[in-house]
Image 1 (tube, rainbow, N blue to C red):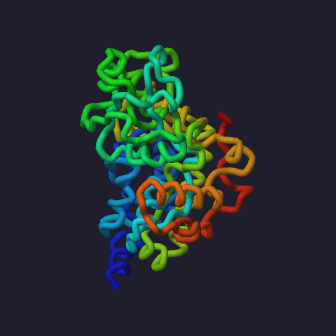
Image 2 (tube, helix red, strand yellow):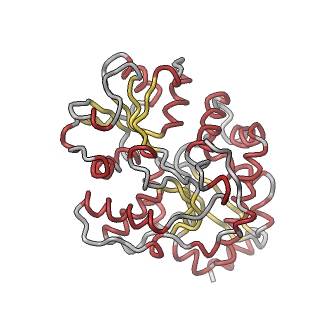
Image 3 (cartoon, rainbow, N blue to C red):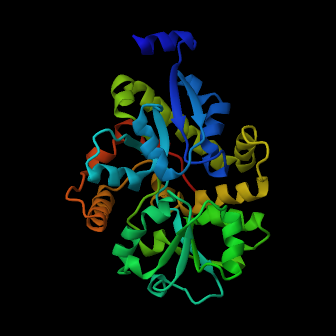
Amino acid sequence: MQAQTEDVARGGLIPVRFILNTFFSGPQAWFFLAADNGYFAEEGLDVTFSEGNSLARAVTTMTTGAFDAGYGDLNELVRMQAEGRDNTPVAVMAIHNRPPYTIAVDANGRIKNAADLPGARLISHPQDAAWLLFPEFCRATGIDPDSVDITISEASHKDMVLQMLAGDWDGIFGFVNTVAAQAIEAGVDPQVSLHHLAWHTEAPAFYGGAMMVTRAFRDAHPKAVAGLCRAVNRGLVDTVADIDAAIDAVARRNPSLDRAANRARLMGTLALEMGDEAAAPLGLGDVDDSRLRTIARLIAEAKGYTKQPAPEDIFDRSYLVPSAERAKMPVA
């Protein structure tokens, strides 16, 4: 009855409380473009976006009951399932085909690959998805996680880049394109100064961000979930077609946005995390169940969990748009 009251109060549209991964920024542009182009309203949805604290934390936040949908880390969803949590959301649309996570190092330093990490001094934000997945990264690459020293800091990536290049740290946990954009803001050319130990090369089984809904919302509003997927897919199509319009949509919500840095972040995300060989011909949205099983195994082994959740417990592909209509990404 409460949901019906809310629907009437908001003009007959179904309200959707949506938690994002972080502050309003370039690599979320498709959500905002979909909203500004009226795609959610056409699906009967009134979507309210809230800024989040991290891709991983967004998944946990969805378990509080304060949100109906969100943009969270698919790997963290697997971890929570493996841990035995019974109130986890379910992923309905993969956004990243490849993990965005990295340990960014000085391009002129000694660290060139994962085997060079022992003895390194690394720094991370609390709840950074790359740091949370470091035990799994080590499991996949054969590195002892205790062989590195990790400092947790609230400093910005912009400051971390400058500190690392000054010799304070050997590497920074983060997203490839986020660190690169923050380097640009710091006046550093990331192509020249940074080298990445990226998950997509060192531990390629992992995924990244995915659109998720709570199980209660899915059960109560299955048509709304399908509409959400259709609207976001259309936003992705429009984003690829007009990057500047996508950045305009972000800037309308974050007027202080560094447009150049966030344009670079968006372009890099579309090409790197979303534009792999699978996304180019097949379109974005679905996942490979064998990869989900590998992720579950690596997480269970690294964390000491006994449960390895099945793909169907994590991802529900029944709401995806037909493959021929899915957004096609530029190839990295």
